[in-house]
Image (tube, rainbow, N blue to C red; front, side, top):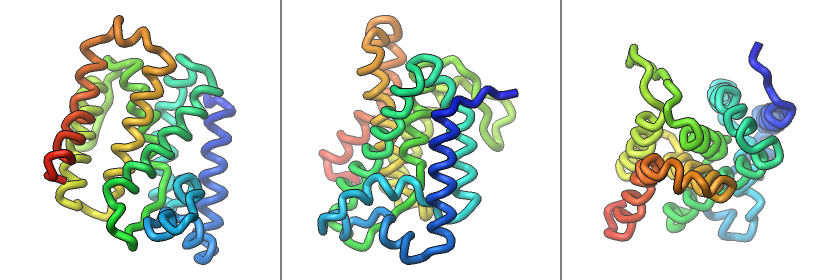
Length: 216
């Protein structure tokens, strides 16, 4: 049986309880979702509270199942306290990047743990890049770093093209949070896994080059 740590259980439980409250209480959902206008108006707590709200059960389950599979990688390397710190840093980083890219869109809003979960996923990939991960429509599992880089490149495309009702910027910001926090917690990776550190930084560099060039 998969050994789920209490820290992971606590985060999943918090997401479940807050999301269910939001499902059944529209006023609560509207008050605590991420909203550019409200955050700029001073309600900065939304940058965190929105990460525990979800649109529906399928949205909630997808995020929590992803967390379920990758949380233990981070906990094994860093312990539960640093895992929780990384989760919240990634959550906040996702909200801040969304705020940066949508600052002139007062009606932009978002919810979901995707930023935080993507941060944990990207951290797990940096720590164990040779993991094999499967993806729908691709029958052969691929190295984790290939999927990680590909996902962020897709997120850049999604941010540029506004594909679907998906918070691509929050996902990308969460990945940056997980990446940076991993290197802060384990700076030796810069020496022992230099190539992987560089490869996983490539999409991040591309994002900011495109933003600086006005392409996003």
